[in-house]
Image 1 (cartoon, one colour):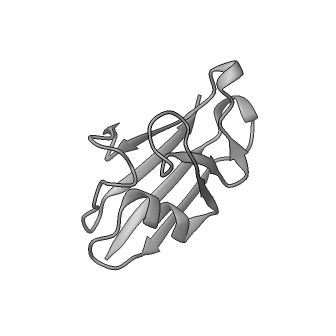
Image 2: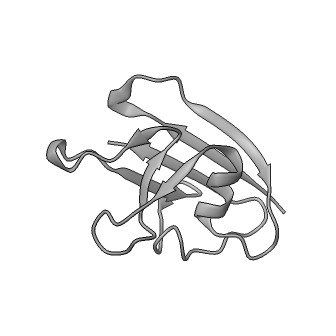
Length: 96
């Protein structure tokens, strides 16, 4: 199946990244993002599977900077490492 991945780096000032990736049925948001760019998972708040860094940009709790994700233009309904995507979904990550 094919899904879209969009990265908006916000305060980091980097140019956005937008890619389409092919992933197997049953892939999660993290799986699809990892097919497009490097993803590092570590415990941010709740789980060792939290998204810690995307494409080299890490969370920064001291400054309140985290990765936030949307699915088809709406806030993600679940944890990104749990949410299974469907063909045609678009995942957008925003660094705020």
